[in-house]
Image (cartoon, rainbow over all chains, first blue to last red; front, top):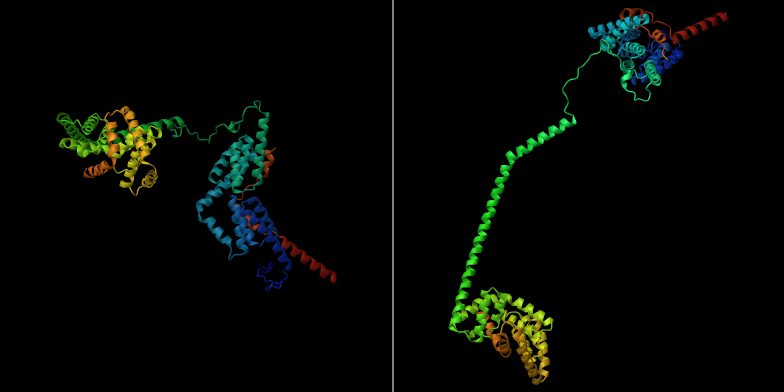
Length: 511
Length: 52
């Protein structure tokens, strides 16, 4: 703060250090001026230029030496388009404080671009002309001039406001609104612009109320002004943005079609080629499989032929013995494809070593390889018969199974059980003994020992009676089987079971 | 309702360059501090006169 008399810099004391004047009242006045300056600054910062001008003018009325307020006022005037007012304030500010003053810089900036400065001053002159013309009633001429001015200098708010007023007078509310919005963009709280906008709203409302077709929707057409000399007509171009629905859909379809065509032309041959290659690999694999199966068939055919030859030989050279007949029956079944029956017939051969003829022994050997695989099937049929209480059928099946597969203790065990169930205790005891002898560590050996121990306490008479009843039952039951050889074979086996067990074991071992 | 004539009268002409000189020279109007100083001087002078 400087002394209002001598301009010297003041300190905290209320006496000027230079001239000795009492400055305490001046200091209070200066503080009040600064307060209005701060208010003006705050308004200018939010673009309330009208309010800022009022506050800054008040600040200067209180203290005309408030340099900051004056500089800011000049800035606000310039922003509103009043360049000359702005410059005046800066010149005054510089005259009050010539050194260390922002106003000097502002003046230099404003005068730097001579052309722009001249253009602005010319616009101001035209505005003044237009104002005079409007006052005199030459509104058309005024409007033309003002349009040029506002087009070149949209910041000249007075020109915008005057033009808006003329538009409102002519009923061109949309154009007036545009001018006023420009003003409000620069000066947010411009009272005049807001008042004119309010006026436009009221006039439009009035128009709507008085309109005869009030229920129809009002469009912007009512604000549409007739064409004037300054309007530029832009013809509608035939070019259409590719946003129309039908055209877009057509284009998409065409593109998809081209894509599908390219796919078939470029990609599908490669796909077919790879499929062909895969097919070739698969077919070569199948060819190999066919070749191996052909070899297998050839080997089976040669086996079959051998069997056929043996069978024919056997038939011609003789074979009246039961074993020979069983062998022949087994060969017959084998040739007919009845593998199970073939195994059963073969199992009826009590003593394979009794087949002295070389061909018969060879045939037996060949057929016995087939016999073992059917042992479970024979056993299953025996089990079913046993469960159904048909013990004779069960005995037959279990005995055959035990002959077909001499390594299975279960078959022998169940043969013994079937005999015991049928009442043939002697045969049952023999088969239990077979279990103990041939499979001493098996789970069935314990029960077999238990049975045998129980049987030793009983008399031989009951065992013999059981054996006789078993024999009679087997003689009556056996003929029901398809093999006529079976009853005699079973009877023979019942008597010879312990001896033939070792023979079969040795035969199976040799095989 | 807007009165065009009344409104048009409210519009002030904008300062042109030729008017700047006069504006600057005529700006030296007394502000409140000048007025108060003047009042104080007058009060002091009248006080002296009364004392005599």
